[in-house]
Amino acid sequence: MLQRRARMLKQVRKFFDDRGFIEVQTPCLSADTVVDVHLDPPTLPSRQLDIPAVDLPPELFLQTSPEFAMKRLLVAGATAIYQIAPAFRAGERGPLHNPEFTMLEWYRVGDSAAAAMDLLDEFSQHSLGSQPCRRLSYREAFAQYEGFDPIDAPLPVVKAAAEKWDAALAASLGDDRDALLDVLLSLSLQPRMSAAAPVILSGYPLSQAALAQPSAADPATAERFEWFAQGVELGNGYGELLDADVLAQRAEANNRARQAAGRRPLPVGSQLEAAMRQGLPACSGVAVGFDRLLMVATAARRIDEVQTFPIERA
Image (cartoon, rainbow, N blue to C red):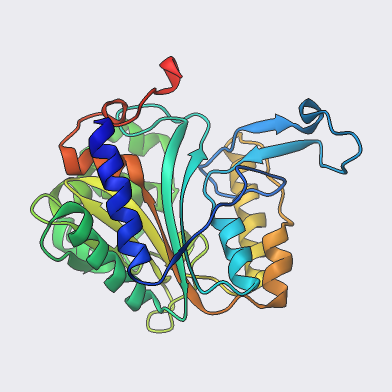
């Protein structure tokens, strides 16, 4: 597996190098972190660094993704960049999860979401040796596999559909529409829609936009898309949000949701927000779980099979 992993890393670098991207490195430790409802970044007390002459916040965050720093590079003038970096997420362990994993992430200035999906399709064929990706919108996928429009359907319809797949889980989620839709995506759609060929699913509900732009074509949706193969979520991409005020508003809303779920709030103001106020150029980006990509490429069943030392043996 060491040799297979090394070959895949070379293939990835060649793919992006051949297309004019520059490989970059950004810090694993930062005062900033992505504010996501479901992601918990591990922390390090700044005092443990033992550099009292440097003005640091009380704690630093191991990055759940290099997204914030890479976008700051775009503001500074970079145009096409990629990174293969360690990423960290607390509370995640299972067949597809390890608290430390490898993230492949790329951004290109001037790319629309459609152009980013085309590049992702190219990358899918290059890395998996597969046929072109099937393209589906979020609305189309739910209509095909569950028989309703996920954005316009009444909440009782969504709840009833989720209960058919996992009644206890659906009941625990109450009236959280997005969480119920996630249950259906994970249990119903994912395994079926990507069994024969990789799929790029686009047009997620605006309530699930994360850091994606609202869609001009369908205001109820966002320019967010995901990549699936063999039932596994491999990547997540956006036509990137450019408005710093909206970034702050979404972070505040995510913190309220985090606190309601018993999670700690995360810092809202960030160096990315400050950079975006200078002007983030129109761009799109994609984040791919490299370990999962290697799992699909080698038919591995657990992430442990493609990592050198998972957390229990690190």
